[in-house]
Length: 159
Image (cartoon, rainbow, N blue to C red; front, side, top):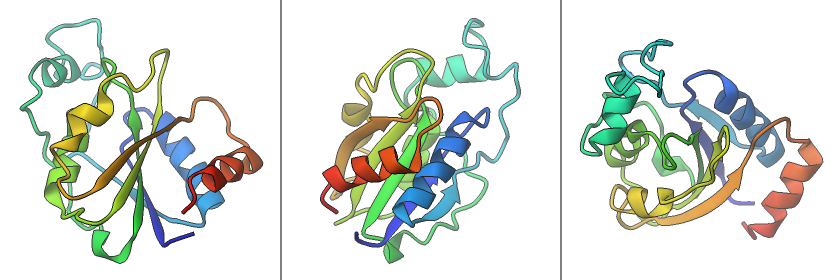
């Protein structure tokens, strides 16, 4: 497999666990996408239309600031990009991350965790944020993933 990075955003720890499992199975480096201002429980209350996450998802132009820009994207051929599904798409901090780096010539494979929905329009909504990259819908990694199952999925990607 080509040199890979598993970059992820996790608001509650669920995606972090999935990213760690994937990084081990892919023998990849791990990078956490952190917001400059962490999300609180109240920020994540999707039932409150005034919560931070609700406001960000209503206005797709919002780009939450990143805590750092330390990812060495140029060193990798493949980037597995993970996040929780919010409102059937990726949180807008994923757009912030994609727009902060040059992904030209890179293959970006999405993975996500979700309480019930699939990727929805995620690929379409992220594509403009990473011009020159190949962006692929990957896999939902809900629940505990065995190393064998993850390696089997990785083999289907022909990396």
